[in-house]
Image (cartoon, rainbow, N blue to C red):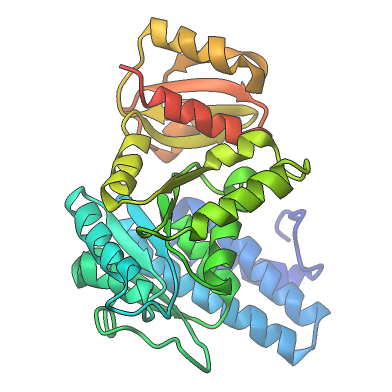
Length: 345
């Protein structure tokens, strides 16, 4: 009998078969994860005979697999996800602004992700073009069909479940732009804010765009400031997660500025590693420590080489880095630090 794993089905004969299948899966160093997933599937069959539950889990897993397959070839390319109303007319200011935003951001080297439907989603795919855009559609009994700029494209993915769709909106993008919209738009906007605020999503610019003469975001931000922040339901620093603009050029500038010095983040144990596009001088690192030591549990912000965990996965090994013992609580202040960092050098 093979060595017993802590996560198993409780049946040696089944566990041995699962281990053999995992080795045959051509997954290399990830065979342990394949083995755990197969174990989970078998445990489901042993513990739950509700067909409705199993259908949900089966479809969710299929969606995760296919969407991952679509995005994998493009993982090293930055992307902007655009949210907004499916009901925006083609002659509306927000539709025209979305087309222009997508055109400009693609010229700066970004790809565009939308929900694949009409309105703002259509405008995003139109401006970016089929080659430079993705669409993550949702199967609904009304409103939501693929727009003509993405229908039939190999980068168009259709979801049954909103939770999978929203996962990939955030997981595969680097910046979020939100135009005015209805309940769905606000759901996507506030889920983005929540995941960034809690550290469940990587840092990103979250940009709220108001068309000229619109007070949509102004009124909403006033409510959040007065009722949520003023009432103590969120930290005052959480408002730093939001960037409100009323021009496309300003939105593009904010996205580019966010990645001027900052490249990406990685957590290694208790350490937070910030990868940089360019090294910071000792003087500028001292400025970071002077202004942002309050978000550290201990020690200070210091330059570092790539850590062993990064070397094992070969993650951007050539980039300069900072390492810190971030408290992983005050993400609003952490975003302030990133924006300050991007003004240095």
